[in-house]
Length: 260
Ligand code: CO8
Image (cartoon, rainbow, N blue to C red; front, side, top):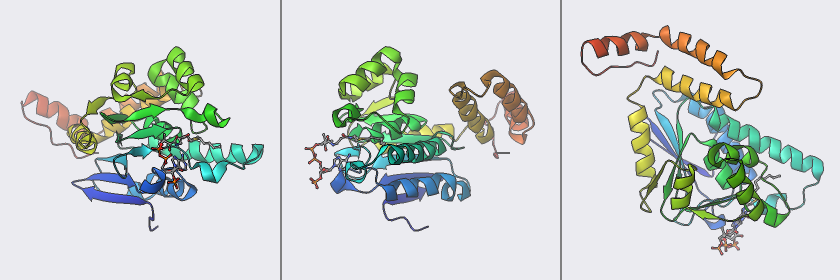
């Protein structure tokens, strides 16, 4: 698939994906969602030696200012449900991706943009980043998982406040609430995201993938997370990387993980 909107820069095993619709503040239109879906369900799975993915927005003003309002202003109930389901499915692909995905939030992360950042495994915010779920201003609620994931990061009370008031918060408050993992000066978001990925890439890749699966399992009502952890632990024990990690510890050297 040729991408019209996503710009993908693959260097040293890290894919930096820039959503490139600066004039619309990188709002998520149907084409952008299709390209994200394709990357996280197909192209991204085929990259040999992929360490992780950084998601960011073009320009200095916005990460993503939401779903593209011009595309959904006329939806009826059934179309609205289909729209929300499609968005949720794409964001689940990101949340369940086998390699870590870090959002480098370089400006407004509003509505679907805040939801996209929350679907990533980690979030780095620039000092000028602004987060918010302004859907109630439009007579809507978040449809891409925001009512569920916001609670996971900030707790029920603060989530209700942010979702009902549509207030925006800055990077410092987002850090204090646990919504982001780090705050950096504007312009350094991608570099910090890469730093996180480079550190994680020194660990055993299968183990990292199992961490993602097990943490996600906590939030899946149909999954017993403890049972999942037992299985995943057993799977890790069967890897060459476990032998290598244990041997490296005993021999007091750095482990050389192969991802199997
Ligand atoms: N969709 C489409 N276009 C947008 C969006 C958007 N979400 N946000 C900004 N733009 C466009 C503007 O229309 C404008 O275009 P133009 O230059 O052609 O007029 C351009 O980007 C620049 O924006 P502004 O001139 O408004 O820039 P300001 O600096 O004045 O304001 C803001 C920046 C505060 C970010 C402002 O643009 C804004 O409030 N944007 C909308 C934010 C918002 O409400 N986002 C939530 C959208 S709803 C959503 O995401 C729901 C997700 C789930 C969907 C489920 C569907 C069923």
